[in-house]
Image 1 (cartoon, rainbow, N blue to C red):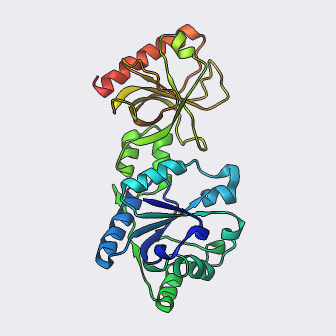
Image 2: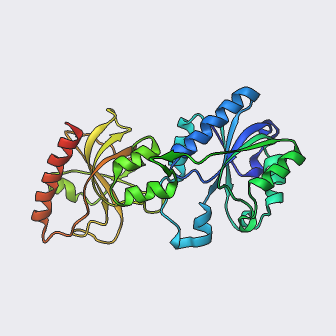
Image 3: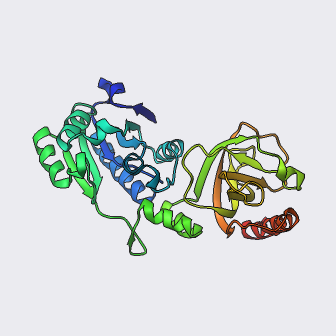
Amino acid sequence: MEVIRGIGNLRDRHRGCVASIGNYDGVHKGHQTIVAQLKEQGAVLNLPVTVITFEPHPQEYFRRDQAPRRLTGFREKIMALREAKVDRVLLLRFGRHLAQMSPGEFVQKILVDGIGVRYLLVGDDFRFGKDRTGDFAFLQKAAAADGFNVDRIPTYLVNGDRVSSSRVRACLAKGDMSGARELLGRHYTISGRVVHGDKRGREWGFPTANINLERRPPPLTGIFAVRVNGLSQDNSPGVASLGTRPVVDGEHLILEVYLFDFNQDIYGKRIAVQFINKLRDEQDFADVETLKTQIAQDVIDAKILLRC
């Protein structure tokens, strides 16, 4: 899969494609359905599949600190789109210039002159352009004038409700990992590089891998039964703590993972942590000994859930 960073890096060979536009945060089942239909149309027209997405997320531009927490960082989103067999991702920097672009300018500059779109597929609630004034009716008129086809895909439902990034976020916030998994089509995962920590877990008999959170805080906290990929043996079971560690620090958000029966140097490795079940919320214990007792119980509970 090719990642094209900005319209300035588009070349003649990028013209002619089937495409979709969106934030693709989480690359959930709704997004996957769009990609699947794009791939079908691409096969019919013998054209590559292009996803147009944004960095930062538009709400992070407009709402700053009030923007919802991302499901996936940029690297995780790209990995998910690669797994979905997208051919190209056109990454547009969302700033003042793009925010002020009219719907007509967006269509002409990016869709027509930029990628030479032949078929465009959008969600049924898609809006774009300055003040979100562009809609499907606008795209239909533009498509007729500029010689491409446009279609919209019906809302994807799970258990009678629309699948959306906000719905996945709500499941994660309340610890409903199975609900999130149903909407995502996979376990919720955070990836990152293993970095050095304060070694307190090692002193307590539970050495942990500390993961660098390379993005805004994720939409969940607590203690979880997890499986880890990216090591010599994939699906390595363990317990993860995602929070501020009130007994130790209480300020900085940290993801740390204790892997069962594991004793390897993995500093610098990039790993993917799959969140299987939530064990409990993060707690403030009276002292370190009480915390160590609880960690031991967390390990027992996780091993039962993970059947290991």
